[in-house]
Structures are given as C-alpha cells and as structure tokens.
Amino acid sequence: MTTADPHRAVPYRPDGRVVFETPRLIGRHLVAADAEPMFAVYGDAGAMRWVGDGNPLERERCVRWIDVTHRNYERYGYGMTALLDRATHDVAGFIGLVHPNGQREAEIKYALRRDYWGRGLASEAATGMLGYAAAVLGLDHVIATAAPEHVISHRVLSKAGLQRDGVRRNADGSQTQMFAWRRAASGQNDG
Image 1 (tube, one colour):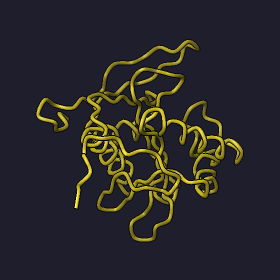
Image 2: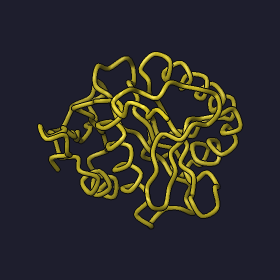
Image 3: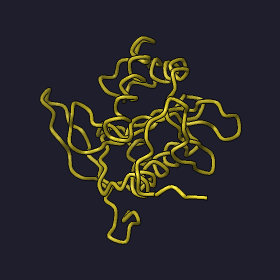
C-alpha cells in the first residue's frame, strides 16, 4: 500500500474529494450539485452584507462560480470547497483559498448558511483550511480581508490564527482590515 505525499496538492476531480476534516465539518471539492446550496448561502441578501460588494448572487452566478472554482483547482491546486456538517452531511457553507482579481497572495474566504451561525464553525473551518494550506499545499502565507466594523469576522479570523496586518485604503475611499497567517519555521501556525 502506498501513501499519498501530504505536501502535494490534491488535484481537482469532479467527485467531491475531501480535502480536510475537522471535528464537526468536512471540506470537499465543489460539485455541480453545490449550486443550489451555494445559492442558499450567497443568495441571502442579509448574509451577503459583509461579502464582496454586499450584493447577493443569482443562481446563474453560483453555477459559474463552480466552473471558476474547477479552473482554480486545475491552475492552483485549490479553490473554494463545500463545508459539510459531519452529523447530517448537509452543506453548511463554503470556504476556500482564492486569488481575487488575480492578486498574488492566497486569500481565505468563507460564508455559512444562517442556521449555522454562532456555533464557532467559521473559526473551525478556517483552522481546517489553514492546516490544509500548510500541510498539503505547502503554503507559507495566507491573507484575509474584512470590513473594519465587522468585528465578528475579526474574531473568527483571529481565533483561526490570523493576525491583524494593517488597513488597506481602497480606490473607492473605503477601508479593509487586513489579516495574515504565516506558517512558523517549524511548520506549525505561529498564531
């Protein structure tokens, strides 16, 4: 029996391959059937207040996002993943490492269905994704962004081991709180 090299990226396969697990969640590659659960998360106007431009996504954009994610898995070896509730196997939300607008650094992004909020699952998922980023993908640095006033997201990111890393002034005059995670020399998270 051969064992997989833990430092090699898991190639994308349209089979929903598991990429990380936590005590309460399973992170797996996206499949076409994730469009409807994705719409349940990203189509929720209230939940999207803090995501991207603050506007909910239409179903068609969720389908396209899955296609983009498949290309990201081929290009980078990673992208967005579905988060499954281990107890029910329902899609609880999504998390991933992305390069918005072609930025150089991998950025962690996440969103959960409203009925999964307030349980500590976002921090658990972010910790799992960062562990995957270090151990499997070999990444040494991941960033995150949040609105300066979105203190709940700040707590999620801090609990997962990201550190505040300054404030970015955007072209439209708004500001974005930056966070960074860096793998310690020992291979463990330094946060």
